[in-house]
Picture 1 (cartoon, helix red, strand yellow):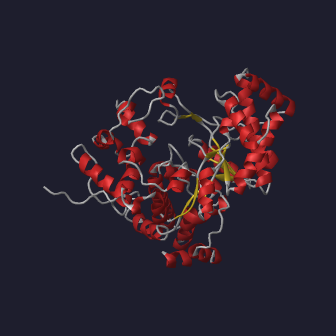
Picture 2 (cartoon, one colour):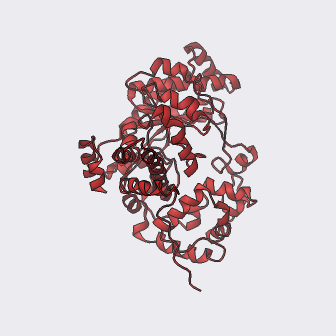
Length: 497
């Protein structure tokens, strides 16, 4: 018996209220055609530099997706069965069809999760799948995907154009020499794919690999790093290299938000201890906070936007870390304090015209209590989008409800997708635009906004705010130029869409 083709409901994630939904549709219609501004993510620049066909469906969609993997593992599926590599060389499942079958037969586990929403969008809207994954359909869907991935239209650059990505920011280690970005720039992609400076490995002096990373930093800067001042000078040099390569921002994933500065003499002592391999945990923690202060100071000088997303205990299970490495789903949120932690940096730089500090959290209790009040008074502070465990339909609604009263819309940065999964970028932006349309529609229905104001705000959240927050380059596209020349109304957006 033939089944109807799998399609996605046009009103998915919009409010169910019959008064609000038509307004949400109207607002969404004005944003669905906007280009994607992706200023915070983890796509490998080499993917676009090489522009090779994607591998098999399992390697593309299952094995690297820690959202998906963690759910399956929580239901007793071994990492080995999902093809997640082991560090000790013990064999794991390598047949991509078998890995896909394991995932497809457990599709029901993802009901109600954002993983399902994103994957549905990827499968249906991007890859043209016409039946839902299941044990019965697994092989048919797999064969369909193999056929699609072999086509030129499904190579990374072709999809980049199809997704209408105006600019994509990657995340790159401070020691990276950025060869893929250089290759892209040589082909005219230098303002479309830009690096982001991620120095975490060098700021946490108790990391097992810290001394090796310092040696590498010395090699790429051509310097000898014998102490604190040498380390700071080398980091400043690497930031200059990233700026020349088109970077717009830095990215900091510390456990705590503390940014208390130390004296140079104390910082020198801690680095000397770390270079000897004998640093104390409390000193390492203090040094990490000090270096956040230093990163803010450097941003006032070179203009890089400073992104801070603390509050995650990474690699919660040390046995899994030893066997599999990081990024396999064992990162767990922690309570996070911002008000006292950031006071030193904000009382020093919070009104500095060259600092833009974008704050993220996975502790949503802080949205209304701490983050919105900080962004609502300090010119340097903007609120980052809900991310990681909170970039869900309900999480994003709660975010708007929690922060808008105090921070408004224009002390936020718009949406960032924070994804490694290239094919999910349009899915994540689509969901954010739908949630914002629903929130704005409620304000219109309650006569708290006029419809034209809601449309203009939706366009700002989807497009203009991320561009302005990250000082994205002017690309010269007609839509951007029209939009910027007619800021006072939403007429251009309406006509363009």
